[in-house]
Length: 131
Image: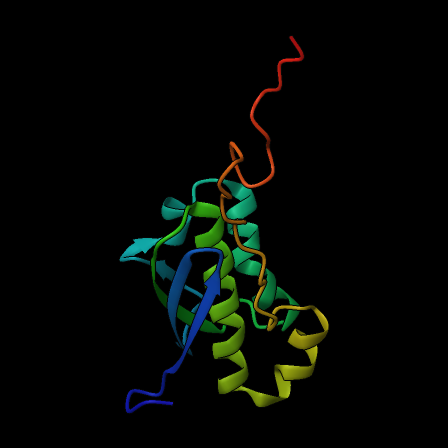
């Protein structure tokens, strides 16, 4: 917790990195200086963001500010979710068991596989012509 009573955590997913601050409040979520509903327009992504808060039964009790860079929208949403979960556990260590059970504290380590030489993509071979 810093001087202004906020819990800080970083979340990661794919190539996205999110910095998240959590403080007691009315349940406002701001991502990159925008209301989260306007930043993540798709309902699925908004649901991803709300998952840890709902799992911890803390809806409308915390204000969340996040800055997120890198990756696409889906990865960014996952990164913010990871950050929110970590920040909540720093703020309320009692929530750790609940969030851990829901799998919110685990860094999803799946990243894009690298392209190999002699192949068109990571695993896709070049077209083979028999004759």
